[in-house]
Image 1 (cartoon, protein in one colour):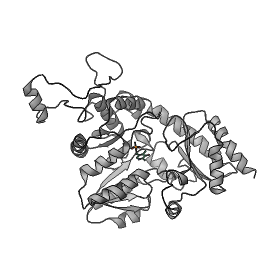
Image 2 (cartoon, rainbow, N blue to C red):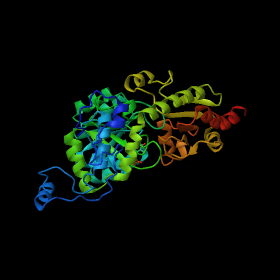
Image 3 (tube, rainbow, N blue to C red):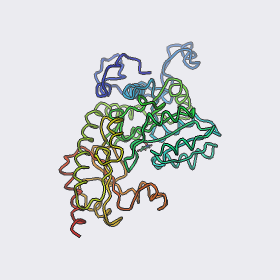
Image 4 (tube, rainbow, N blue to C red):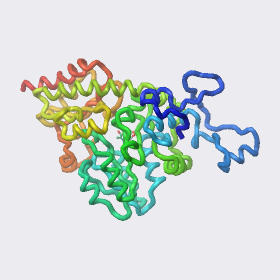
Length: 399
Ligand SMILES: *Cc1c(COP(=O)(O)O)cnc(C)c1O
């Protein structure tokens, strides 16, 4: 539980301050409790802890003070009652499904989900009798039409990867409520600094802490945020038995990440906005996908739902794969990697990496062409990022 009275604090303050209960040493920064287990003062206390008659630590697969600080801070930032930290973003999604659904239940999910999330649903959850129907992210009629009597969960990411399409969260919450299903939002791209899905009607938020929450590409981790019953009792109950817990060291790194999340997200947004405008005016660029641009079809929704447009910019170059690869290969500053949310700008060719396992027909249906590039805009000087991209782009423009 985020048990302190900081309801009036803004997200930056919460990121720096929330959840920290000082130990006996009056330490200023959070301590790392690198311990697998905890001792009891008596046999009776041990018995009471194990019987859950009294609260307290037993074993770090269940709870750990450093991990708890991270959970409380993130819960406060998302405006949730409770959070459970996990070993990765994928185990946050797995734990949510395993804790809250039964065999025979049905999920409706966005077509534009992270690749491993799609694999988890299609190749693994299906074996336990949980079926998923995929629909277009902002095709609200399709979500509605896919509802069945056994639908228990609606799962989406907004904005989507890599085309930066949005879903209207309050509208999705209405569909979920009418269906008697939970709305689960993967808030990886926006973080609570730019968007708080729980305030907009979502039931649960899942995170890959690996991305912006860490923000410096150091650790893999995840979290689920929501109410005390579903997250605090049921998701935590699954986690403590199944075991994908976050390590105290990683929790400490993520705490350091949350402290700078406010300034970093503002920096990412500012740089991405400037890069998107520059790309939109470049003769070699056919289209730019960024919700901050006025010609983005959901620009108004983005203004309403998010307090910033995010750090990811995608764009199409004319000339297909050859041209796109040329832009990638001519970079010297940008990192060629599929990771995102880092201080270092990264460049990805989705059609041959993150979406390479999809069939060409699937990619075409999703709008992911051979000329598409995705940049996760880091915190370097924007002029240097532009110059790095311009090496390849200007060579295309003069052909
Ligand atoms: C990376 C990512 C995940 C998975 O997180 P891991 O920490 O890599 O397990 C889930 N959702 C989104 C949107 C992601 O970008």
